[in-house]
Every structure is written in structure tokens, then in C-alpha cells.
Image 1 (cartoon, rainbow, N blue to C red):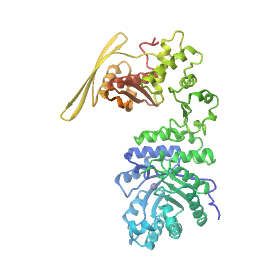
Image 2 (tube, helix red, strand yellow):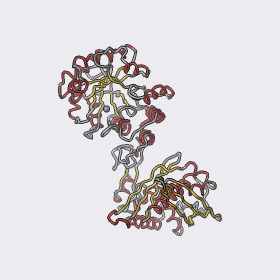
Image 3 (tube, helix red, strand yellow):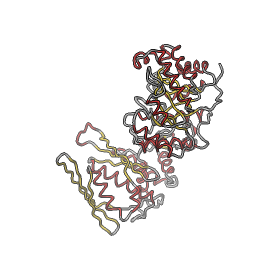
Image 4 (tube, rainbow, N blue to C red):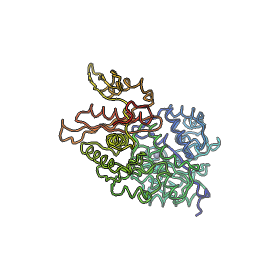
Length: 543
Ligand SMILES: [Zn+2]
């Protein structure tokens, strides 16, 4: 048994735009697909699978426009099935569509499990082998590189290993240069992956053998890693683990694991540090919430809540994280919480550039204020902006403290909201009265709900004085009822995320009343945005 002669060069093959977009709730326009492809290319993956041109007009259009992109690192692959049973490859309309997509790589999916040949394809096993061979030969003759995706390979291998290997053999004989073993149902565990990959590598020395793992047993990343450990040199997966059911292998965790722990060089030099921002960018393009717990790249991946540990973490970050977060473009992050002690608050403030350590009195006041607020229902773990505003406001009230005082841009005199429902349509109107220094401003906003209307009115009132507002927009709004048992007296917590060109921030509001809680989060979100933008404040000290 000789290992393939690819050395340690493992090919990273991304299928976000084809298999990944099978995920429920993931719907990409052609523009979105082009942006995702550009992000993956910039990160430096080897292959971007653009879609299945034979299956829908959107993918067809994507391939027609893919040449607009300034491809720097990746090659484009088009995906499709083997020819139809009992027909010739020449003139097969689906193969023709794949050819027209005009990609350097064609990925052909074929059956490798007798159950699927008998029941799904309803043809003979010999005909299935001929379909694989003819289709692969067709594209090799056209000068394309052929990747053979052996569908359900691990289940097929368990049912009839001789036949499963025959499927690979005919693809290889026809000129396919890569054999991708697909765990299509996602049920295979790592030890079985190891045994099967070893066996296949023994049969096909010199060919690139890879895996395509689904996450139905929560092993997709582990399966991909052990396959590479065994000698596989091609890994398919999707950004952020997107995919149908439980998803595909999370390509970012695979890349980070292999680069940081197994010394593989997969991305161009320096690009690993773009991993976290790429993951976030693709989640935004996909319009899916970004999972804070996502390994390596999530905002909580290197965050810790334990108050006792905070000072130790500040001294020795390597003692509390498995890798240096900066290597994947993430950062160590200390959460603020009721559980936290004083040191936690100091570290958190220092992260924001506020030095409280030389102001013991201020640090004590901040800690007391946080504990009181958390008791009322506030949560600052995810609301960094509100934490910073709180620190600055407390600093403004503390004699002798100059640390990052809070400027104020506007003062609320009052607001009124009218909620109207007529003929099945909801429409709200808000009137906001503000004091801007000496000036009193009244503005009216309309929206689909009271919060939207308040946002519109607040923006209208401020837009003339603060043109920076044009770059600040709402990205997420979450409402949580705390202590639901108390029914109508329950407290409402609103978390609101705002963004500008540079990034995002979250603010929190708490009240018995949802509109009041929303206003608080809204007003703080705008204030924090103006602080970031360096807008001139009316009241510079906040005292
Ligand atoms: Zn798949």
C-alpha cells in the first residue's frame, strides 16, 4: 500500500453554494452567490462548487456570471449527475448543461450503494457502472478535471464492498482524478471512516481520495479530520457547516484544525487570520444568525464567564484557550455577568480601552451598578455597547474620574406612539420630542410597528444635526419575556443590534413595557453609534 503522492497537500473543496444551500432558511440570490464565492476565493479555498446548473435557472445564471469575479485562489466546479440510464452520454441534456457551465472542474455524482441502484435508480448494477464510466469519460474527453462524488459510499461499502469499489474503479479508469467518498446520510462514525478510507487508498494509489461528510452524528468535522489523518487529500465541506438536516462538515473548523494542530498548509500565507471575518460575512450574506458557539470563529469561542478566572486569563490567556484566538482572526473575550467579580469588570473595561484599575472607587461603583441592573433583568454578556455606555455614565457621575466619560447627543423630553390596526394592516405612528442643547425638536415617524415608528421618528429628529446616522442601521431585534409565570407583570428584555461599515454592537433595554424597553435599546444603540463615529456631542461630559 502506497500513500498518494500528493505529499501533505490537502485540497479544500467548498460546497456552500450547492450542498450548503440545501439548508432550511438559506436562500441565496445570484448576487449573494457571487459574493459568497468571492469571499471563499479571498479566503483561499482551492475549489468553489458553484451549484448544479442542470437543476435550476439561478445556478445556470451564476455560472454564466462567475467569470466576472477576479478569481485569485480557487477553481470553479460545476456539479451534476451521471447520464440517464440506457442512453448515450453524447446528447444527454444534463451533461450538456454541465459542459456549457464551462468550469475547469466537473463534479459528477453517481450511485455507489446497491440499494439506491435497485430502488432509486431502478436500473441494473451493470448499467449504473456504465453510466459512471461514460459520464466521466465524456468530460475527460472535453478536457475537464473530473471529481467523482461516490454517493452513499460508506453505506454502500457496508452493504456490498465489492460493488462500491467497482463504482470507484470504473470512474478512475474513465479518467476521474479524484474519488470523493460521500457519507451522504451522515451516520458514519470516525473509526469506520478510518477503516474505509485506508481500504480505498490501498486500492487506488496515486489517485486523490477525499471525503464529503454530513453531520447527522455530530461527527462531520471529526470524520473529515481522521480521513486526512489516514491519507485523504481532498475534503469537501461548507461554510459554517451549512447544509440540509444537520449540515455538512464545517469547513472552517476543518481548516483551523488541520492548519493549527496538524501543520497542514491549506490557505495562502496569512489568510487563516481571515477565518472569523469570512465566517461572519457569509452568515450575513446568507441572512442567518451567526452562532456565538461556533468553534474557532464564534464570538463566544474564546469567551469566559468565570469571574474567578478573569485576572488569570488576563495574565496567561494561553492557559484558558486551546489555540491563540488571533490566529483565526478571533479574540479572547471576557463576558460581564452577575457572577463576575471586580477583576472581570476591569478586564472587560480594558478591552474597550477604559482603564479602571487606577480608579478603585469607580470600579466599585460600576460593579454595583451592573449587579443592580442584572437583578432587574439586564444582561450584558451580549450587550457590549450597553456595558460601555454604563461605565461611561457612571464615570461621569463619579467625582475625580476622567476615564472615558459619556458624551450625550440628545435628551428625551417624551414620546407618544399610536398603534393602528385597520383592514388587516398594522401601522404605527410615533411622535418623539427631544432636546438638542438649546433646541427643541419634534419629529413624527411611521412604521410597521411601534418600534419601527420610534426608530424612524428618532432618526428624523437627529438626522440634520448628525449626518453620521445615515451609516447606522438596525440589523437585529430580539424580545425576551423574563419570568413568564408572572404573566402580564412579566419583565420584557429587548436586545437590539446595530451596525455601521466597521462592525456591529448590541444594546439592551428592560422594562415592564415592551415599547419602553425597545426605546432604551434604540436610544442607546444610536448613542453608541454616534460615539463610534466620533460625532460632536452637545453635552461632552455627561455629568
Ligand atoms: Zn452532501
